[in-house]
Amino acid sequence: QDTFRPEPLAWELKLTRYYRNDNEWDRYVDKAKRKIRIKSTGSSLGGSAYSIQLDCYGTLAERTTSESDGLGFEELTYRPLYDTTLGGTTQVIVVCATASIT
Image (cartoon, rainbow, N blue to C red; front, side, top):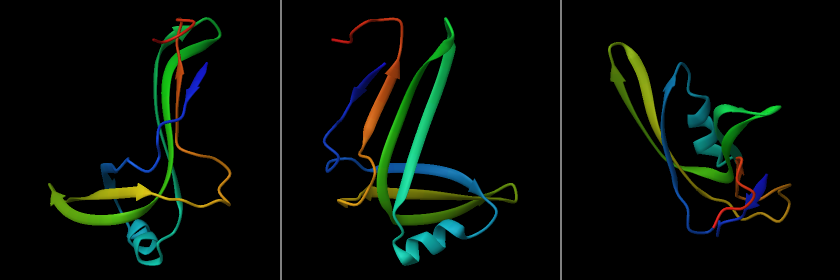
């Protein structure tokens, strides 16, 4: 397992999700700090599995909504958060069979 720490001031995360309530809108209004984790797991690797995981911290900067076939969707844009009280930082964790990635 290797941990890579990119420059956290340059990222912007845009995601689209299905929603049933306005909880994230409330977080937009109060500018709440959010930890976002995106993880993709692949095939088995001994006792674990190949995977890539992105952890980042930010606040919701923009929100747009749309509807399709009676379902509500929202596009959320998160921007980086600088806060010395956070317990972590932006990081990408890769689990693979290769000892090193060059």
